[in-house]
Length: 173
Image (cartoon, rainbow, N blue to C red; front, top):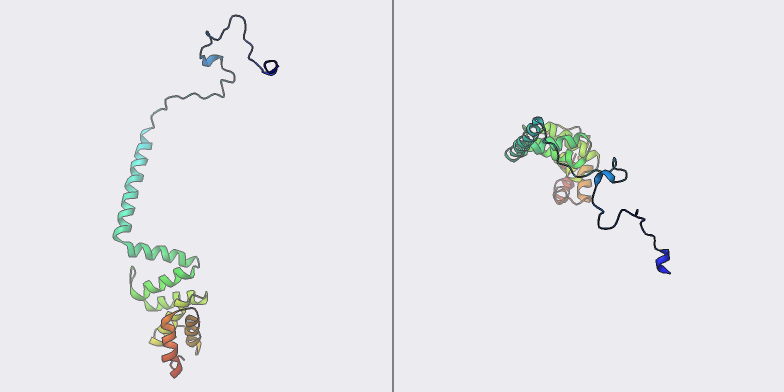
C-alpha cells in the first residue's frame, strides 16, 4: 500500500539505472544552471588599484601614528561643527592647551561657550574659570556663578571648591 503512494521516476525502456550518466547538455533549464568555471584573470588596473589601496592604508596608518594629536584635533573639530557638546569641549581644551593646534585661548572660550550652552558641565566650568582668569569671553555679570553652580550640580569636583572658596567671597561676578 505504501509503495502505491510512492512516486517514482519513469524511465524509458532503453534507459536503466546503470547507463544514466552525468550529461550537462541534457539538464533541464541549463541556461539557469551555472556550473563552476575557472575565472578569468583580473586586468592589470585591478592589481594596480589594489596595490595603491594597500600603500594608502599603510601611509594613513603611519600618519595617524606619528601625528595623533593633529588627527585627533581635526576629527574632534569635525564632530564639534556637527554640534556634539563633548567634541566642542575637546576642541576648546585643544585650543586652550595648544595640543595638536596653535594655542588660542579666545577660540577655546568660544568652543567652551558652545558646549556649555548645550549643558556640558566641564565646559561650563572651564568657561567660568577662563572668565575669572581674564580671558576674553562673552559672559554677562553673574553668569559665571550660574555656570559654576551648574558644573557643581553635575558632578565637577573642582566646581565645588571654587563655589565654596571663591564665589562665597563675591569673586564670581
